[in-house]
Image 1 (cartoon, protein in one colour):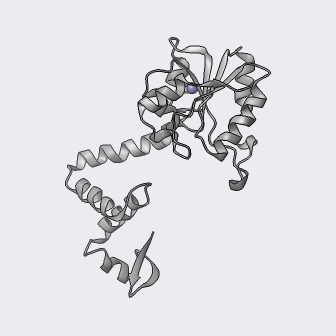
Image 2 (cartoon, helix red, strand yellow):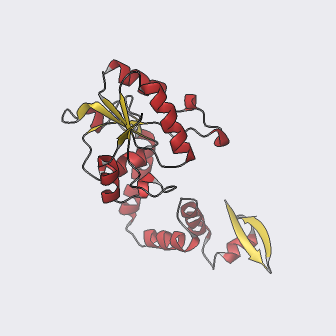
Image 3 (cartoon, rainbow, N blue to C red):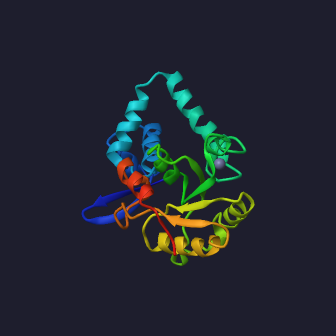
Length: 223
Ligand SMILES: [Zn+2]
């Protein structure tokens, strides 16, 4: 629990046990300061938003807070990974893999579950998915063995998959991973890649539905 504090242009790191820090939280009492600090540690939450969320929660009835806390714990303890596609799931197999209306011979490969959810929002894709758990990145020490790639090859081989669509963020890591996968999978099936309807360097999960739909429609087979 650290808090950054500027004193006459000097950057000093303090923590919440420090009397200066408790003082600088604009008179917030300690349990509230702790709550704000927890919110600040979440991605995309700055100090002002953290304060607003914490104060909002304090105004809620106790039962609502209990439900919120138990939802957090329940999600953490019960949600794991689908044993087939590695999407987030509380069951052994996720809803998409269990859905008989989906096209079972089509697999769309994504880096993580957030990308899968973005594609699902388009309502255009009716096949299955495979979540890699990241992208190959030698710079960050991520090698192919650390991703769900072996399981993908086995899956494609065993289920006589007709096509694998690679839907990876257009970046050096995304391109490297796409090339690696296409070489591995081509002996087994047709491999295509979503078209660049997306700006280079952008994150798949933040793309709007129309852009993602066009990208899917314009996918190209890798020669
Ligand atoms: Zn699944």
